[in-house]
Amino acid sequence: MYTSEISGYLLYHKKRGVTSFGALHAVKKALSTNKVGHTGSLDKFASGLLLALAGRALKLAPLFAGCDKQYEGVVKFGEETDTLDPEGAVIAEAPVPSFDALEAALPQFRGAIMQEPPAYSALHVDGRRASALVRKGETVSLQKRPVSIYRLELVSYTPPFAEIRVHCSKGAYIRSLARDIARAAGSCARLESLNRTRIAGFRLEDAVDEDGVSEAVAETAAGAVTSADINGQKHASRISVIHPVDKKMFALLNMPCRAVDGQTARSMIHGKNLAPLMRGEFDDEFANGVLGVFCEENGVERFIAFIEKKEKTWKYGYVYAGA
Image 1 (cartoon, helix red, strand yellow):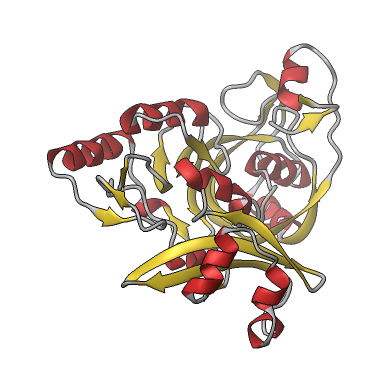
Image 2 (tube, rainbow, N blue to C red; image 1 turned 180 degrees about the vertical axis):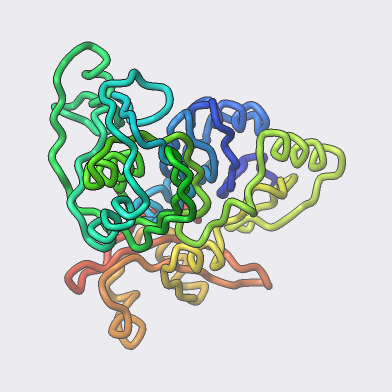
């Protein structure tokens, strides 16, 4: 049996000047499907890695929610905009800080910090996006929240521009980081540019742009490659830029995975109670968290499901093979 459904993940290189939604529109058009979503947006002025999910893999979005990220950015000191980026209106001006003042300000922003998100953000206030409220003239106050800055490096400083590299936890805003560094240095600032280079273990250098997606689709149409699907079905074609959900994906997410036999896999597909299936050494060796489950039969490795263990109790996250 053959299926034309496209499932997997795509490393997409978003260009500056296009929204994440707009970037996905181009992907949907190239793949001829609306079943595409991203795991975390990039601002319109920003560029870099956008990790997209297609088909059944959309249900795997929770696996990507906690990913750390890496960025390269350019901060412009001396002026602050309402959006904290080059597209906003200037709301404050101040003298550009000295190199010594800037260097002295950086250490307090490394490690675990409390950060106030930008008012222009996708965060919700009383069920509505903060950015939408601000554009309507309403005052928005977002509470500070804990984030981690694993690495903050000043690459160069040619006033008023500073080039920085940042490795941060989920939830951290580089626009806010630029604002706060500037204030600590006795100035103000906004981001001039931002480029996301990594999401967990996924790298920008492995990504493709809109042209790359279109070329891959055209190559597939010219000479389809038949490959096994996780249900024992067959894909009429496999688009090269759509990566399958496999053990490599879990490794890049720094998440463990385990192999089960065919009978256990079929029990999972049918939603059987996980407790007896996971009982024994397999259960005892695994702490709380997410586990990817795979099964190899007839020379084909299949992704079955991701399951979660909380307080010694197993629960289904999503049964991929049974979709």
